[in-house]
Image (cartoon, rainbow, N blue to C red):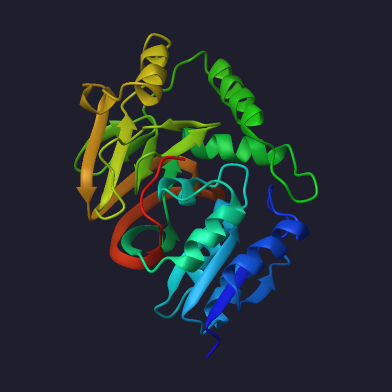
Length: 295
């Protein structure tokens, strides 16, 4: 049995051959496997028998790996993407070499839950509607040498989507047992994601060790937009607002859509769905950490 495997997406935004070499030196005796196409990391993870699996990629690569692991292993996530939400949310360093050094030398681990929607695992978030539309819109811009456009592209596309709707979003789906909503955000941790260095606290009570949190605005209007933005960025109060459906620490959530609706997990477009079955997979994964720290 190989002791450690390093799965690398060579096309992730911050991955270079030089950094891969530096990460390998910090990790020590590892077998390095390079992904070649979308979905390849899932197959590589399914085939490994290592005691430790390190993943040097962006959030899409992390997602593929956790969907491929078929045996118990310690997993370490190294930031190779433009945002790399998962290692940041776990408190790991943003520098991949420093992160590799910490992961290789620590024996501290953390047991976390994962989410699952329609059978697909996710690590930190999933969205139905608006944010999945945003992911799709950015993907339409194409990639440069495999690299997705950055935060400015996301901001521009979000502005375009909201302008097209004149800042208003009407109810378009039903959270069973809870009511109608315009879109749905499901979080496995806080923050939900990042805008540059700024964490976005969509579901401020969400924790890796708990179940899933749902935040689903019943509708969105031009008057609510600025308050929602301030709340997510600076002072999370929106989960207590009467116009938001909020569920904390859920084992299961079911959502039915009025029509085909975009779905994303960990920033990856899964296509359109007409219903979504979310489940919490508690204590699903043991991750290597080096103590919590701000990133």
